[in-house]
Image 1 (cartoon, rainbow, N blue to C red):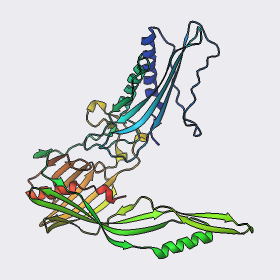
Image 2 (image 1 turned 60 degrees about the horizontal axis):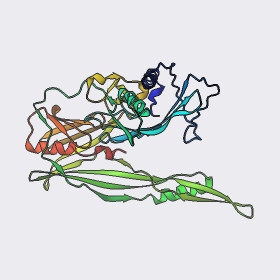
Image 3 (image 1 turned 90 degrees about the vertical axis):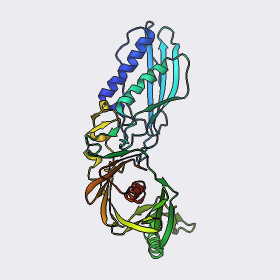
Image 4 (image 1 turned 120 degrees about the horizontal axis):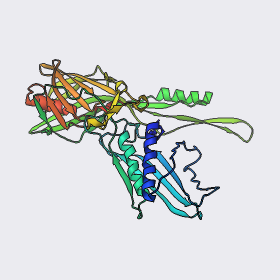
Length: 409
């Protein structure tokens, strides 16, 4: 489940203090202690009720009713390279004059919280709407908007994300650092190379459903070839990857009672859902320069050797002053996919190891560090640890630009 930061006692106290200060400053008077309570919305309600009745009013008092209703837009696995709306906060505020029961202030507005993209090479903690410090400080703006004489719209806040912090960072010893590359991707192609029908199995499962009344899913599979071409100078570098895809549809069983008292059973198959893809770790994939095959490689996916669950700190991805202790319940669900590529180009063996859930990739030649790239979808920065030939540069940068997560679903 997503994390509700205001359930944490320390953050709750900070928000209480923010609103108490804003009220005192606006009315130039002291206020009684503020007590923020957090409740879960009844599942049968779309919005919470906002009750503002005062049974026994004092003429010399003002009565504040403040409601913060947050919808958390939980989006696990969303791209770290995009700004996303992580939550929507609806503010209801009413101040009643104890002398005559009139409303001195009656305001309602919505604040959209946007979580900024993560810096390159960082892994976002997807359960958090933003970095906790940035999220709590957002209530300074919300409190000031309550007392603005003229309302503004829309109310939006863009906040730093919370990222997994690792002290290791970039491997030392780089002889060259680059942030621009002479490599441009061309549109990739996907070709179906073989269809694998499963008519007998699906027919049997349909018969079982009719007999037992229990729905059984049906599936179909096919083999595909993905072709990723890149242009570098006068050369075209192409990576060819073969993979399998399985799609499944749930079969539902409907029982009906006929007019004569008998019962009949029918089955209906739903639409095919999201595809499951995988590559054969023993199957060679190929690298071409022009029309010549210059190398091969294999793909294997395993739990990351440096699991995201092992980390104990978080930060905003760039400022060391934002480092904090990572609560266990804030950690991501997945440990991440550890991609390992073993390959050979001409007479040199190489290995590519993904880091930080594919945000970075380390390439070794004959088990010596050769190149590190930063960037999940495509490299935005690279660090060279030994002299590479022009062809090696092109091949390794092309490999680092392939969306390998597509083949592990």
